[in-house]
Length: 121
Length: 109
Image 1 (cartoon, one colour):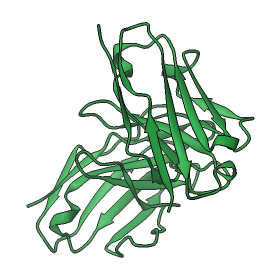
Image 2: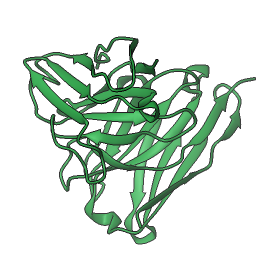
Image 3: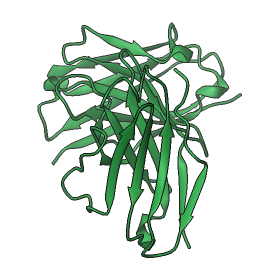
């Protein structure tokens, strides 16, 4: 059974940092593109970043470029999101999601349960 | 990286059909056949309902169908059931980025 389990969310002050993790199981993690998608309270879904199987390609939404870094450790079947210089508008539930294809298509067949990040003083 | 445009809300009675539109540009919806639709119930993670414009994952009822014409994709739900009441999001590949729609709240009357 495919499982994605996020962790690392919490309350952080503006300007602070947080590192999210996503533990994957039930599939060959190293074979899939992976993404982070977020959802602000009461708002819609927003793609944040994605990463290629070997980590050689990474893409970000403009609003997080230079502040967030996506990475992965295939040996640990884990996906990460390092978030620096956090702003109030980064407050959201952050989901990790698996791209169903072996190449990037932004079609997400499995999602984690999400982890809440709250940026507030 | 502008969001795709969806109606904020749609509604229908049980047994009826509803269609949700999703309008983008030639750089996203119109340029690729990687359009997908997600259903999200309150407090839950999104669930893939349609991919590659019109394909259904295993387990998704055939009451759900998708199509695309130019820069606009559509999700049609026929034979509405109470459990279909949820938020629906379209999503499109856009080359080096990904764009979601703003979401549509479906109310089953």
